[in-house]
Amino acid sequence: MATPPMSSRKTLVLLAVLLSPVVLRAAETAPLQLSVVPDLALHPRNTKIEGLCLSAWGENPFRGVALGFVNGASGESVGLGYGLLNYSQRFSGASLGWVNVNAEFFVGWQAGFVNVSRGEFTGLQSGWFNYARVCRGVQFGFVNYAESLHGVQIGLANVAMNNAWFEEFPRQWAKGFALVNWSF
Image (cartoon, one colour):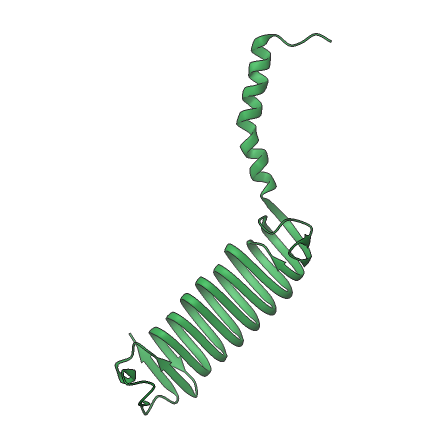
C-alpha cells in the first residue's frame, strides 16, 4: 500500500485536529442516563444529560427531567427534579421531593417537606420548613426562615433576619408575624 503524498497527510492531520473538539464535545452530553449510584451508571457523573435521567441515585448536570430516589445535579442544571431527595449546585426549574437542597443559586420552585437554599433563591419555596440564605420571592410553609428576604413569607412562623423587627432576635421575638411577613 502506498503512503499518501505529504500534502494529503497534512490535510488528514489538519482535519483530525479540527474535528477533535467536535468529537470530544459530542462525548460530553447524552440523551439518557440510567444510574444505580453515581459511579455505577451508563455515563460518568460529569456527562451532561440532555433528556431523561432515571436513577436510584444519580449525580449528573442535566437539561431535562431527573426521576429517581436521589437526584443530584452538579454544575448548572435546568428542568425538573422529582424524587425523595433532590440536591443541586446551580439549578433553574422545579425541584419536587421530600427534601430539596441547593448550594449556590436556585431559580424556580422548590416543593417538599424540607427546602434548603444555602445561596440565592428566586421563586417559590413551598413546604413544611423553608430556609434560604437570600430569598427573592415567596416562602409558603409552616416555618419559613430567610437571612435576607426580598419578598413575602406565609406560614405559622416567619423569620426574616434583615427585617428591622427582628433586630433583637433571639432575645426578643417580634409579635405579629405568625401568618405573614415581608421585606422589600
